[in-house]
Each structure stands twice: as C-alpha cells, then as structure tokens.
Image 1 (cartoon, rainbow, N blue to C red):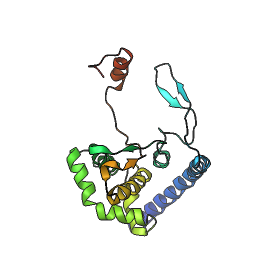
Image 2 (image 1 turned 180 degrees about the vertical axis):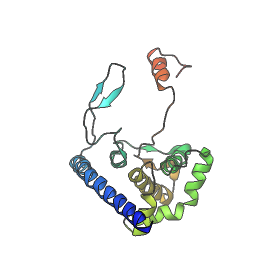
Image 3 (image 1 turned 90 degrees about the vertical axis):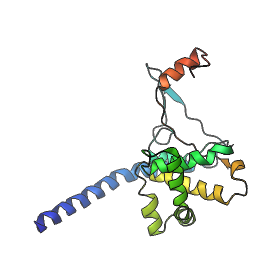
Image 4 (image 1 turned 30 degrees about the horizontal axis):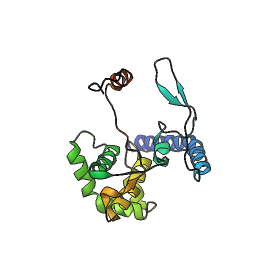
Length: 192
C-alpha cells in the first residue's frame, strides 16, 4: 500500500512538472509581448467578429479576454477615480479570484478587509515564500490576485481612496448580455 501511494505521488509530481514545462513557453511569450508594449501610451486590440456577433481579439498571446497571466498584466491606459463604490468592487473582485463568489458581496469585501495585513505583506514582498503561497492559492486567477494586491496597497496608503485613480479592470460576469446588446442597438432605455 505504501509503495502504491509513493508511485502515485511520483506520478503526480511528474505530471505537474510536465504541465509547467508546457506552460512556461506561453508564459514567457506573454511577458515578452507585455515588455514590448511597456512604454506604449495605449495599446489597441484589433477584433474579429464571428457570425453570432461575438467579438474576439486577433492577437493570440496577450489580450483582455486571455488567461489569468494576460489579465494580470493588462491595465487601462486611462485611469478612473474609484469614487464611492470602486474600492468595494475591487475587494469583491479579489475575493472572487479566491473562490469566495458564493457568499454575499458584503461578505466578500469583509473577507478582503480581514486579509488586509496579508495583502499588504504580499504587495511589499510578493516573492517571499509565504506570500507566494497565499497569492498563488487564488484558484481563479493568481496573477490577477497579485495585481489587485498591489492596487489595494496603493489605495489603502492613499490619503483619499475615493480619488485614487485605478487602471485595473474589474471583471464581472454578466447574464443575458445578448439581450443588453439588442436593447442598446434598439436604443431601448429601459432594457439596457
């Protein structure tokens, strides 16, 4: 039995190494593309539209609907002040990345507040072993979670959080988006 468990651990470890080996080249490619755009004032993503009217970015490696690494690297060119609700939604977004999306919105924000000291430590030293364990445990997006930790640290150290200009996108899942688009096309004020 012990030998069987050891073989299974060995198999799982080899599988994890193989996965990392296949992910590394795409990770490096995304970083390379991001570095090339680092000093650009703005970056635009040309789009293709399919027969259903869905829009997809043409660049394959780094785009706004890409994987966690892509989303963690990208920021808006023009920031917006957080205003009265922005900090709340930034907290909700971070909690969602940690899989807390089944609790109420207020509980998500409270969860982030309870993690404040850890978040500040992560922002200060993200490569510390304990800090890596924390932010990399965000199952729905560790790289996005790390970006939000940096942002929250800046917001919390700001003298006026509502006036803090954020450049991070806060992703939200929509339901019935198609109906909203139809309403917009028809200029239906009540429908969307």
